[in-house]
Image 1: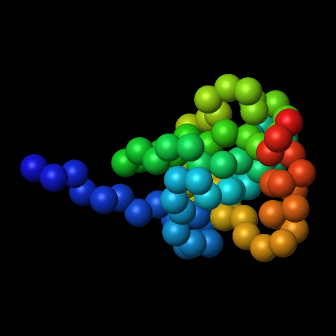
Image 2: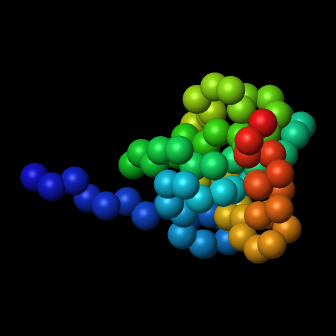
Length: 83
């Protein structure tokens, strides 16, 4: 039996895919993360910069994220992705 393709969407209904950049909140902070892996129920997101950026990231539900797009988000991603 073939696996069913699961489509994840953010809180605004925008479709998410592996490699997409999202904003998530964790504790009292907000993080810019890249989606590393998508499972049928959750996604693994790894921060671009700051706490947790050296590890595997966190498992989050897709509806607890917001897809980032546009020039301001891209500047942040390019500025911190190499550190």
